[in-house]
Image (cartoon, rainbow, N blue to C red; front, side):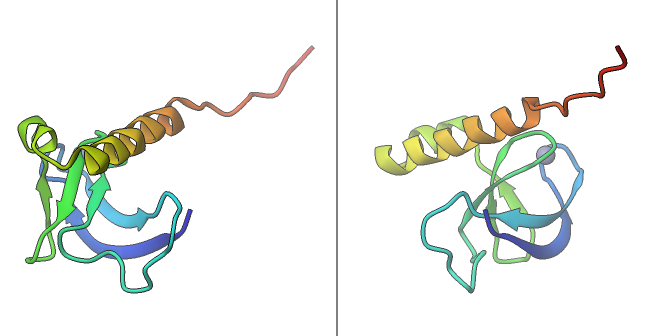
Length: 96
Ligand SMILES: [Zn+2]
């Protein structure tokens, strides 16, 4: 995963400030993220897009349903991957 710093802008769904974006593999575009690229809020896991005003737009379930099936499946997989990352908890020290 490649992480880059982006403008500090709130998520339009939960309001938390987002300031980094990462890729989930494949070829890394050195100019990414670009307007229209998808991202996932690391707090509420909403699917978002980079907008032309430097902010994000929320991608609604009906918009997701209207996407090309291959892209929709890739994005759904990315959201499920993010949900999996959020559910991982560090293993605590054993005191026995
Ligand atoms: Zn959010």
